[in-house]
Amino acid sequence: MLRRLLTLPIGFCRTFKKFTTFEKLLFHQLMRKKKRKAIKYKTVTFKLSAKQMKSLKNYCRARKTTPTKLIKKSIRNYTEHFASEVPEKYQVMHNQLDLFKKDQEAPSMFD
Image (cartoon, rainbow, N blue to C red):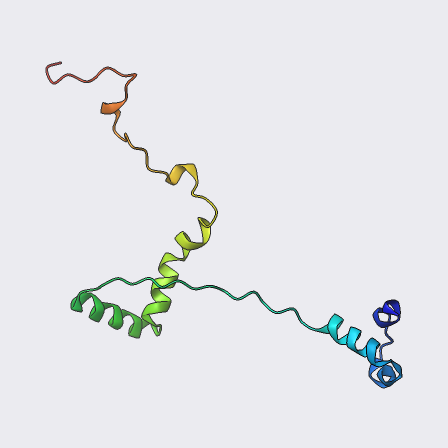
């Protein structure tokens, strides 16, 4: 029965009446589009000074965009590429200066 549904002729609309109710139900379930998974959104808030907000609005008006679209486009590089984990080159090392490395001798001011 399922094979009969999967191997439908090209003009199946005319022959659709020949199927039983159960076969029609199966056909509709096979042809139904899957629902997309709902996306969960999170809210981020931050404050801008009046001058910053005015500048942002003027820039957006000149570029014919919205502040939200501009901000999302600006942070897209950071939000898309680091979803699973941050690469090693972007990790902050605690002792970034060579002064604090234990295997080296501390520099002297009088040398």
